Image 1 (tube, rainbow, N blue to C red):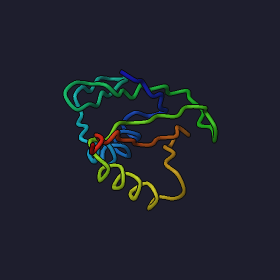
Image 2: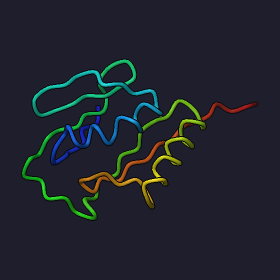
Image 3: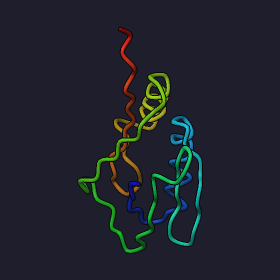
Image 4: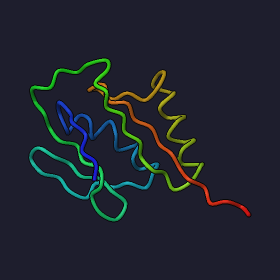
Length: 104
């Protein structure tokens, strides 16, 4: 389980949902101040911090596991369409990765 702080969870969730769907994530839990995403259970949480002041470098780097290389490439292409790098509204850096099985 990994929590991510956000100024407004609903705004960040609406931004993140298309990216998370590419990786096989769905919304599993919605509460007043938190939203949980996952593949089979909530493993990535957005936690509301209404007084959070966004920063260009919050030192938060989130890496989400993708099911395959195609999902990583789709995630990356969608992020690049928004600008250089994947940085959300609150300055969190987000990426995806996969670990392909060896062919030998």
